[in-house]
Amino acid sequence: MDKRKIETDAAPAAIGPYSQGMVARGGCLLFVSGQLGIDPATGAFSGESVEAQTERAIKNLLAVVDRAGGGRASIAKTTVFLKDLADFPRMNEVYSRLLGEPYPARSCVGVLALPKNGLVEIEAIAVLET
Image (cartoon, rainbow, N blue to C red; front, top):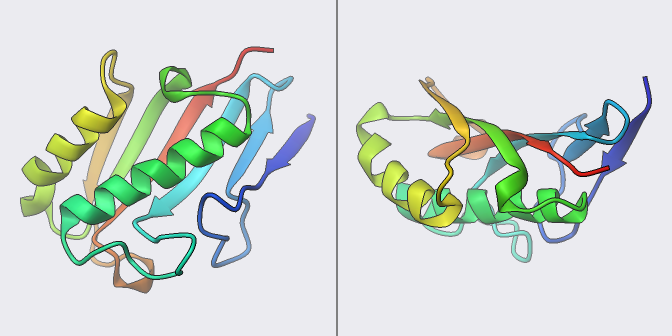
């Protein structure tokens, strides 16, 4: 299988042994690693609220998709990881505003903890035009 690593300075660098994104399946599928609400310019969280971290996480995710040649409409599936499921309505408001219709298929999972003690992490699968 052919694979191609995707990297961009418009999203935070990987904090472990993984790629920001990986294109596979003849160049038509993009797998975007989980993005935290970290500002790539400062390396710090964009704020302490779930709204601020969700907005930055989505911007980071879109930067990786853009670097691979896709756009918002190419995102087919996301998985959202929330440190506190009580934050779901506030995350959902930002998510719906930034991703827009038609919304990707999505799962949302409550987790005990996230890297760097983040509040939200979002990963995606996008379909790219070949």
